[in-house]
Amino acid sequence: MSAQQPNQTITQRLANPTRFMALSATLLPWLWGAAAILIAYGLFLAFFRAPPDYQQGETVKIMFIHVPSAWLAMGGYLLIAISSFGLLVFRHPLADVSAKAAAPLGATFTALALITGSLWGKPMWGTYWVWDARLTSVLILFFLYLGLMALRSSIEEETLAAKLTAILALVGVTILPIIKFSVDWWNTLHQPASVVRLGGAAIHPSILVPLLVMAAGFTVLFVAMHMKAMRNEIMRRRIKAMTMAEIERQSMAAPVSAPASASVSGKAT
Image 1 (cartoon, rainbow, N blue to C red):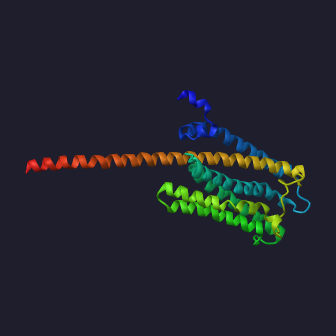
Image 2 (image 1 turned 90 degrees about the horizontal axis):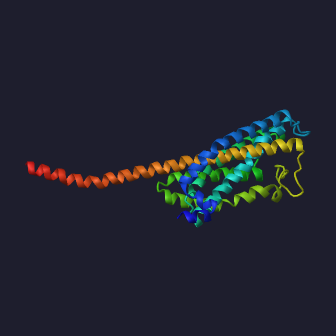
């Protein structure tokens, strides 16, 4: 058995929940610390080093929260889709745990992207909301997150809930390219891609650097929260399995004791 261990891939080694719990316990303090440092430094650069935009003024600083949140809204759903694929195709033991843990986080970052986008839209567009292609597709993404969580919570049997939510997640992944290319495919008020695009970023380094630092901080924070949520879900499933095993043990022991008491009462009469 030990001779086969070195041949295992990282994915195979992490498929063991016990190993994942041990590794995550070691990594989490470092991830929390790194996220705090990156976000604090990013906020310092954003508010004390980045200049106002010549068109947007101080309003441009909303993007230091909005853009990383929007990226993680899409990244969180991509993580769910990959995890769902791992569940349906490879039966990875932690795939459903990963998908379930990522859904509330992705929904939160999507809501944050919508809220900060609305706060930016009011001074720039004169309104908090327009039925713009990019905004509408991100709103659909938010509803997809809510749909995944609602579907899972509505089904008591966890195996069936995992499969159905995985199928829905893979069907819904088509929203991601729509969100990404909506500004190119349709006439939209939303500005086109200015960071990840052919020809390089179209943002001045004084704004791009704080944006990337904030994106890194938000990403590390997402990883830490996702890992923590996975740990909580593993513990919940372990407790549930132990509880069910105890209930089954007691139910199997009950019929044995019942006839014994009945026979004693019969002799007494």
